[in-house]
Amino acid sequence: MYLTPQHVLLAGATGLTGEHLLDRLLSEPTITRVLAPTRKPLAEHPHLDNPVGDVSTLLEHLDGSIDIAFCCLGTTIKQAGSEPAFRAVDLDLVVAFAQRARALGARHLLVISAIGADPQSSVFYNRVKGEMEQALRQQDWPQLTIARPSLLIGERAQARLAERLAAPLSRLIPGKYKGIEALTLARALWRLALEEEDGVRVVESDDLRRLGK
Image (cartoon, rainbow, N blue to C red):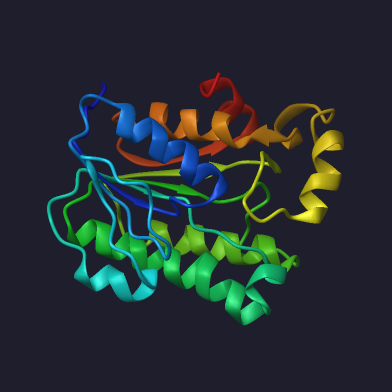
């Protein structure tokens, strides 16, 4: 079964994937409102509601009915400055966003996690992503879609040197570990948003590439 959401909540609209997803949402004729809180203002659009400020502070002030929510929040330990600061974004803020989205009536949450996410992982990054997934599962969403992309490829406003160096090699890796274009991921998320499938769905990177073609 396919849905036609009209009211969307989007976190991470200024990020690599979030920018592409926002463009797609605003071009969809069925969508009448995209609520996208950001730290920096976005370009104006008649269907865009863009509260500006610290996202963690803005959450409690968001209002209006929401059909579906997308979470494209994410940082790196280097950008965040420390492991606790990274956890505050990729775990705490994601979980808080999801809670607020559910309170506003959203029945479907789509969230970007990462390949290798595992709450028992010895790798800090993968462990935090796994803990985030675990926490969202415990929120008992009617429909929860977890996207696990491999290395994201695309031009960021703030370049990440490690990603730029790894991107050419990641294109050559077969299967789910092959790098994925952020635009492809955004397309896949939108396609997944249209599908009504109760429960938790985990979509690995190779399936995301296929869905986003």
